[in-house]
Length: 93
Image (cartoon, rainbow, N blue to C red; front, side, top):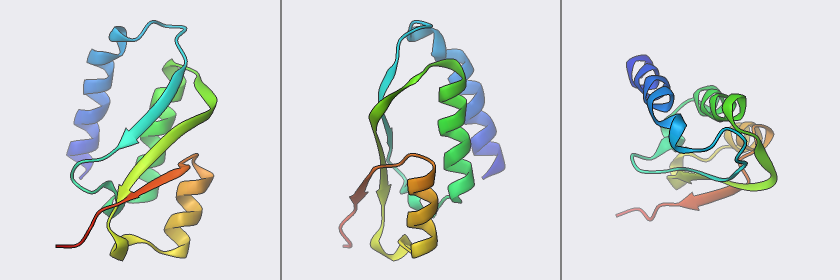
């Protein structure tokens, strides 16, 4: 997991120039691969990484895909505290 997040930090450094320096971020989407299994602190680190480079608009939609079994009061509280304001539930198969 640590290697994956290190790679994501490197990728952000490589891709960040595609967004102009003063452009506000209006939407962040954590999806694909069910990010709800990731420790909330790691998701928070990614949001902070984006915010250090670009301002995040007040009221920006920040979405996290989640499996219903990953939902807990602690996770919901942590996600809300870090700015996640939309949860996308994945249907169980």
